[in-house]
Image (cartoon, rainbow, N blue to C red; front, side, top):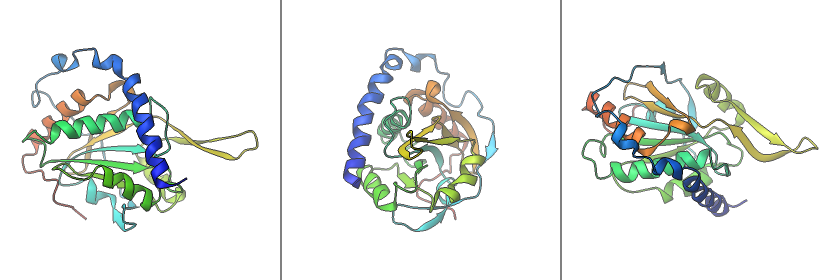
Length: 227
C-alpha cells in the first residue's frame, strides 16, 4: 500500500475517533481539573535506551527525542483503524498541538513523538509523509520506527506496550495489530511522569499535565536534541 493511501487511512480513522470520543467533549472536563502547577506528577520509570530510525532513515537514539523538552510519546501504526486506538492519540495530539502553539508556556517547551510498532510497513518514507503533514509551528511532531520487529521488542517490553499481530484462518498476518493505547508524558530529564490509556487521554487533561511539567522545568526547550 502506498504512503498516500496509508495517510488516507489515518485521516479516515480520525473521523471515527472524534465520533467515539464525542461523549468526552460534552463533559466540561477542563472545569474539573486542578490548576497547572498545583499538583505533583511523580516519576514512574526511566525511559529505556533504544536506537530507532527517524523519518529520513537515519539511526538515532530515542533519548534525542525524550530529553531537553517536555514530551508526549505515543505508540501507533499508520494502518490502525480502531476508533479507540491510535486515532484517539492522533486526534488528541493534533488538538494539544493546536492549543500549545498559542501558549507561551508550552510552544517552546513541548515535543510530540509517535513511534510505530509496525516497522515492516511504516518505513521511513511513510513516516516522512506523515511528518511532513504535521510540520510547521513551534511544537515539533516527530515520527520514529525500528529497523526491524526484533529491534522493537526490547523497547516495547520496557515500556509495557504489549502488541499482537492478528492472523487469518491460514495463520497469515492480516496487517492489524492489537495493542492497548498508551501515551507517555516524559520530563526533560527522561523520566516518565504519567501514562494515559484511552479512558484518560483527553486534550484538556494532557495539556494540564504538560503545563504542570513546563512550570517545573522552565528551561525546557524543544529546539535542543540531546544525544
